[in-house]
Image (cartoon, rainbow, N blue to C red):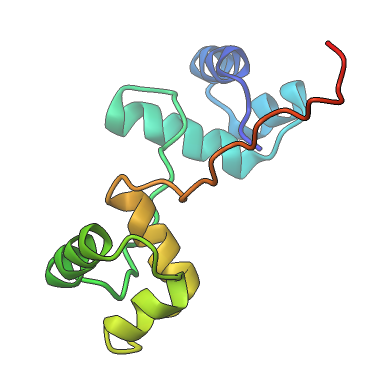
Length: 122
């Protein structure tokens, strides 16, 4: 969990005034290493904001596979995720196909709603 920005600003200001990571950590109840990293980030980037999460792109589907999937979805929208995976050559499983569909902007196929029962009073 990231510390709130108000605390980050206060810690950075206190460290600037006293110059000691140990004293700052003791004052605010945090670790010395966090204080040092915070001050280092401020020095290097000019910001006290948390760094955005960087997740590596580990997708097994490249642009060509995504295009093939898009064309397949448009041609045969009723296939299951497993059938799409098989059509792509069993390169990936259904969960990967689901994520690729979302990436392409396709939502899950929904059933049409059934009409209300005539016996239900409104």
